[in-house]
Image (cartoon, rainbow, N blue to C red; front, side):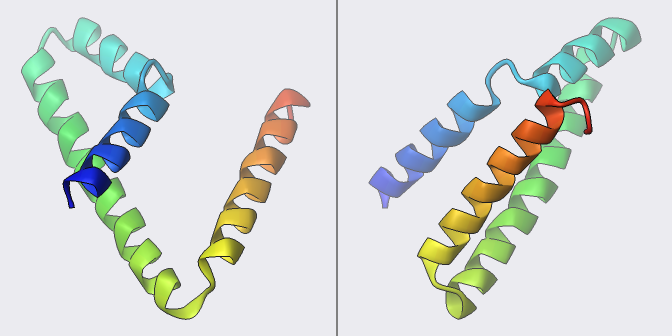
Length: 89
């Protein structure tokens, strides 16, 4: 159980480190002058987004082969990256 916790923590931590969400937090905190309120809002949003993704993952796992989920997710990630590179997104 600890191994799964540490793996998910590490994956999320390093994936989210210095991404656009962090820049939004920095900007909002600097503009508002209320870093604690921005922190609470950010944590609340992460809780909701993560809860939805974990719930959907649990539902998909019951009905879809995990390899299919992985390949579809990877394909969508690449397609979005290409679209962003081409300025379409």
